[in-house]
Structure formats: structure tokens, C-alpha cells
Length: 116
Image 1 (cartoon, helix red, strand yellow):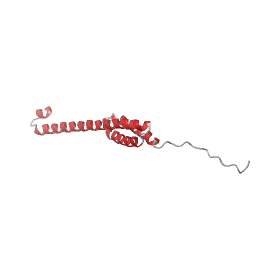
Image 2 (cartoon, rainbow, N blue to C red):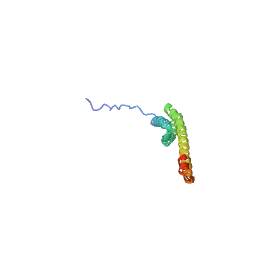
Image 3 (spheres, helix red, strand yellow):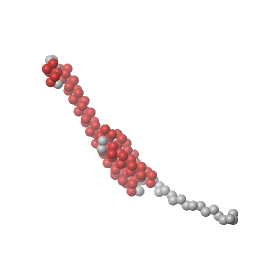
Image 4 (spheres, rainbow, N blue to C red):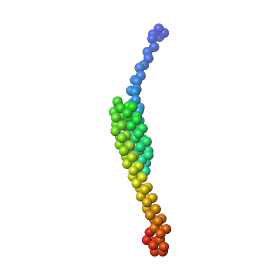
């Protein structure tokens, strides 16, 4: 073995820039879309959808980044749809409770109370 030989360095493959963000955009978009199907988890869907859109726009050169953008928009739309459903349900319940309370307060007999 001679010591005059140059050291050979092994070349490592370099990662493509923003590929991690593309994967993150895709995963967050899919998770957001799944949560968007359940109206009570609309906030999670909206958050995941927005972050997926941001990550997807940064890494839109990759296929997963483009998929993250498309599915992120779907997740965002499902989250907004879920928020509208939850808001409507809460308003309906509130109106029904108010109607019941008004009926009970205006009832003068037990029979009128039982009809509420």
C-alpha cells in the first residue's frame, strides 16, 4: 500500500430541491381531504388544505407538488363546506331551543307546556 495515491471520494446523489415539500403538500392535502369529509373536523381540513397549497405552490415543479395543490384545494373546499354545515346545524339547534323556551314561558297551563 502506498501513501501517494489520492483518496477516492464517493459521490452521493443529491436530492432534488423542494421534493420534500412536494411530498408534504401531497400528504397534508390527502389528510385534509379526509378530515374534510367529516363536518366536525372542518378546521383541521382547512388548516391542512392551506398548508398543502403553500407547500404545493413552492414545489409545483414536481408531480406531487401539483397533486398537493389540486387535492389541497379540494380539502379547503371540503373544510369550508363542513364549516357551513356545522354553522347551520348550530343555528338550527339554537333557534329550536329559543322557540322551546319561549313556548314554555308563554304557556299558562300544564297542557300548553306539554304541547311545547
